[in-house]
Amino acid sequence: MLLVHYLEDSRAHRILWLLEELGVDYSIRVYRRGEDMSAPDELKRVHPLGKSPVIEDGDRVIAESGAIVEYLLDTYGMSSGLRPAAGSEALQDYRYWLHYSEGSAMPLLVMKLVFLKLPERVPFLMRPVVSAVSRGVMKALTDPQLKAHGAFWEETLDRRGWFAGDGFSAADIMMSFPVEVGMARVPFERRPQAVLSWLAAIHARPGYRHAIQRGGAYRYGTKAE
Image (tube, rainbow, N blue to C red):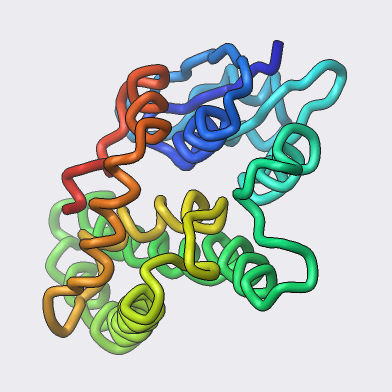
């Protein structure tokens, strides 16, 4: 049976969700975060980088969310409808958002988190200076870019309701984590109605809810609405 190495409150939720949508039997090995929110060392025995998600399917060990999604669709989901038809415009959009989620959105969101947390990680007497530097970097660098990304999401979803074509696809699964995280970190200029409607739609899917029931702790779910 396919095994998912699942770190709580992480991108790994997307893999459980995809497996639920595909109707694939799987088992889960859950890993708890440390006090500093880091992944446990046990994950390094699965993959050298010690990150999640990682799946084992027979003799294959596969890491990286996008690579896992593509593998699962190639292996179990060719007729699932979760990837648009070959040659379609929607397929080009699907590929874009599949890679955008981790290649463009997440690095910026992680950078914002680093600067938010940085003042907490330095000696007390240094905190005023480090806080000022962090605020300056966020104001000049991360927040303007995040605002542009948030507007991009809103415009895309306002036009068609989904990230790739006119229906739900694995691109929406991949985009769920950056958008859910982004609701707390992106300085939207106004309430993002299309993004909120999309979040409500994905959170209502049985596969999404079953994935939370199977995996456990996932702080970014329906609170994002």
